[in-house]
Amino acid sequence: MSYTEAKARYQALGVDTDAAIAKLKTVPVSIHCWQGDDVRGFDTDPSKPLTGGIQTTGNYPGRARTPEELMADMDLMLSLCPGRKKLNLHANYAIFDEENGGWVDRDQIGPKHFKRWVAFCKKHNMGADFNPTFFSHPKCDPLTLSSPDEETRRFWIEHGKASIRISTYLAEELGEPCVMNIWTGDGYKDIPADRLGPRQRYRDAIDQILSEPYDFNLVKPCIESKVFGIGVEAYTVGSSEFALSYAAMNRDKCIPLMDNGHYHPTEVVSDKIPALLAFFPEIALHITRPIRWDSDHVVLLDDETREICKEIVRCGGLEGSVKIALDYFDASINRIAAWTVGVRNLQKALLMALVTPNESLKQLQDEGDFTALLVKQEELKTLPFGEIWAEYCRVCGVPQDGEWLDTVRDYERTVLSHRA
Ligand code: RNT
Ligand code: ZN
Image 1 (cartoon, rainbow, N blue to C red):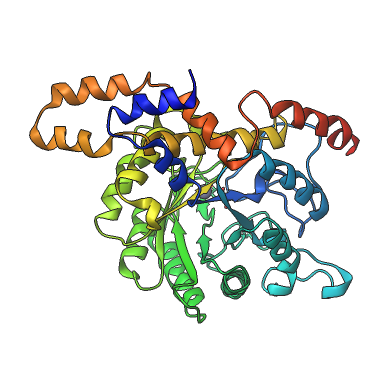
Image 2 (tube, helix red, strand yellow; image 1 turned 120 degrees about the vertical axis):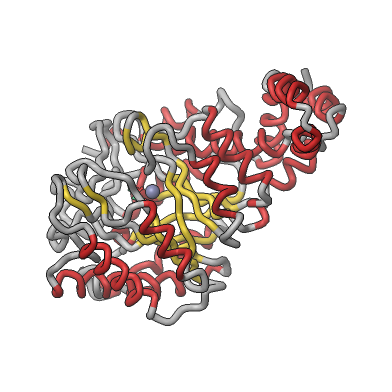
């Protein structure tokens, strides 16, 4: 079947596939830099374990160890992925060199440490998002913003404020708003004696961070919640109710962020998207794949990813109200392939959602014709979507399915395998 034939099949259902393709090309998807190096960054000793309840597992050779290596790996990954991209940076990816005065601690970082990332984004014509890094650092005691130790807490508040200044710089340089996500792994392994104190300190710390001046049109601070992490199983300071309440009470300053690995296993973020959009003009997402816990496996074209994308599309999220980002890290397979397949899967899920006859399905629901709704939704699953996807890849000038893995393999042979 050709694209023209496939297009006609969709047209019969009232779907304009050309318009869907044109739309998806304009939608920014934020790609996480941290898949390339197992969330290590460049500001701490890489032999130390990750902290904050997150883990990368696997020891696949070829991890990027320097900014140059990470950027080169990203050049390749970006060339294999269709659509409009943004780069999602973490503060621990600050680049220190002689020119900018060398290493400083996280409370001292500034725009100059991200100058080379700005150049990288400009080269790829993309905006950037930012994350202060409240984990994998000697000053996690293990708490950060919720620590009872005032000196520790002060250090991390200063880090948050520095991150706002960097986010402003990124937004101004790149001409696109910067989503700045606050997530801490603060919590306890075992039953705490005080659950309120840490949350009050966390709340106050975020207040202090957000007292750093910024233009809310340029910088979009988010609060990301979490249910638990490895080593912090009993109690998470930034729980769902905490994060959502903070965002609800500070709607003029920040937005909520949902990571679909951060809920109890039978909860789904797809359903939470419209629930939040009934109240918040803007929300942010981290799209990942949890297996039994927040395992951050590579994003698949699975039911929940598709359902999340359907909700984004149906709720008008592509007009800017839903900030889409990926967040996963797999160190057990070729990291560039992991990146690429996850990004392409998300693009596929978005395109599938865009070529769904959402208006007529909604009408069936409103008319109460649940029989037709069920039948039609099931029949959509076998439409010739592959041809629409192939056309999208053609239009975007990226390789087709089946064509890109060899390129990654060549790069593995010629570049990655030489990283001892
Ligand atoms: C961790 C959170 C957080 C991190 C990144 C690296 O559970 O999902 O978003 O994955 O900040
Ligand atoms: Zn996340």
